[in-house]
Length: 68
Ligand SMILES: [Cu+2]
Image: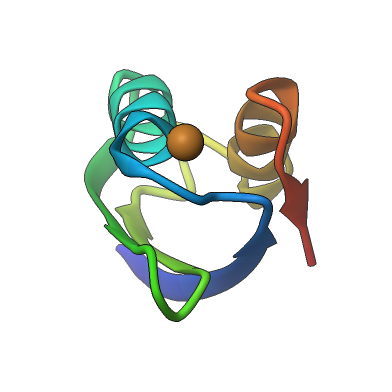
């Protein structure tokens, strides 16, 4: 299991939190996703044999947010 914290720009409200948490959360292999809105950070725990970091970043990007 990998535990990472991503810096994500553009999240501004509860809708953004839900968009990121629900879409990343439904990826197979993602065990936990937690958005810290004020800090602009997203904690993700995932199984790197089932999902890649690139896929997680792409999913956040697809919601309209910029990921470091
Ligand atoms: Cu929002």
